[in-house]
Image 1 (tube, rainbow, N blue to C red):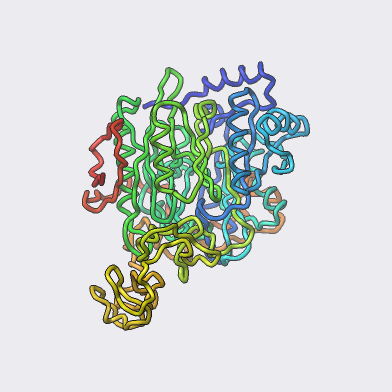
Image 2: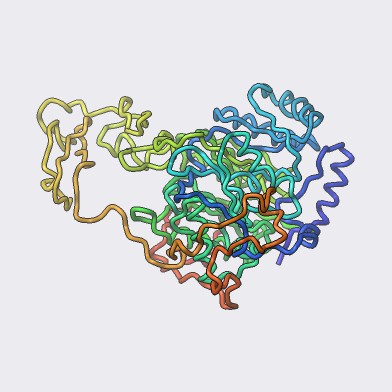
Length: 577
């Protein structure tokens, strides 16, 4: 099994010192030295937890964003260009880059070596002066939520014990922005989480090891309940992490692009992947493709290329899924290894209303991550349903996502469909049939004005309601029609959904002054009341839970055609070309 080694970073640190870098580069994974030095962790069931009073709403990354938290390395020209290109992309997406620096000297270096060098106005960024340990703002940064779908708040998870400065930044940001802070006491990183914005969440099996927990049914249910309380997850799924990849993060091989679509990496032996790694990627695609979406149907899974490079010291994963969605821009890592154009075209095809920007990331990726890992998005201050990236009740579309609809699917001849500020279709640029409106149902028309009882619509099983002829005359507007089939498909009552009683994690009771500096200062557990019954065994048994085999005819896996691909067929997936 290949693992990243800390020795590589001894070389990087020495090189950085020669370049006069203010900070030594630390990898995205927890180094062996950090693991050896850390103190014994407080048992999971005894950690301080302060959840929101009610289940919050957890926004997806494709929701509207106010800004992006970033920390800029400057130790050589290549890394400066990487950050310059990223900051330019964030500014172009009309989001604020919040740049963390340790002191005035470092700020001046960033201004002269990155902002000025790559045409970025200092007024377009905000500098935050905090001590820090590394540059992985995704992993230690704040997880934002909306309690009661109102004003933004943030969740502060536990980061690596050896990086206390990084771990202290989320509460500081909460104080700066006026965001209420909720402490989970759970060890996890932002790169190992994604959600569809509708209550479905994913994090790899790496979370069990991070919290000294056995991967079993009981602990899966406990994690699902915790993330329901803090992040609004109705259910949590756990794909297996890449074998030997130090971070165990899912953003190294997968990413959700909208409420319906997930991209998952694929590779080949010619690209440096071994059999175990190929099997993991296929298994992840199979798991994602087997999950029922809220409301019914399966997620569309699209495979995207990833190459590997191994040396005596480490393995580098040249992933294109480690991208950042920020409003109408998507910043995608590229490497010049023969897969860039295919990867960028996949993003263009799947996100036609976004600007896709490729950013060369060869200097950062050997450290264990890329664009997604070095950025943490900040959603808008107040929740708005229109703009959350999800087509919800009363909406026909989202500003950047039309749910697959076009002018043609709405019955027009051609044109460009858009979404207005109320999340309703804007058909002003759609071209209607020339005969529409003459009072006669002509060839190519379904109707020509007026209404119809929903029960009279051919091929539909409506029981009541009235449909109105769409302005295109090409279809009926059936939004007021009702059927006897419920809109929401009930989810199976299994352990992945976290269907355990809420009282599993009762509210903590703590003396107000017991731990003034937060859970990291806990050294006397006598004042802590356990959050779970005394007979609730988080350590679990030695028997690991396994996911059931998904029949191949239940998957939806789309693979764009390319003569360059060599795809393992061991996943049992249905491939649609």
